[in-house]
Image (cartoon, rainbow, N blue to C red):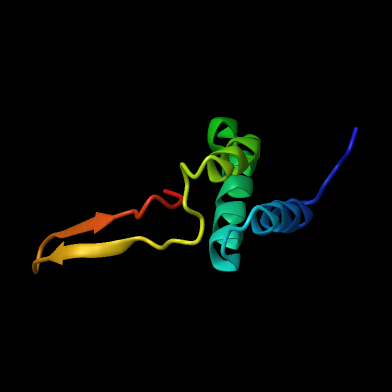
Length: 87
């Protein structure tokens, strides 16, 4: 059995996403959230999602170089678009 530290897993996941052409900031953020979910016992949203994310990037279902942005804003609300990036 292969045993990894959380930090090692974050690094590996980030490197995989970057190799699949994700922006470094996006890759690091997604890797952090995937490992955190797994460590919290929420494996359905954890590191097991990595392969699916890479596949979705390959199919251009996820645009991993994009950033969410605000479409409109009022003093009490905001409307965002995810720009087809990780959500």
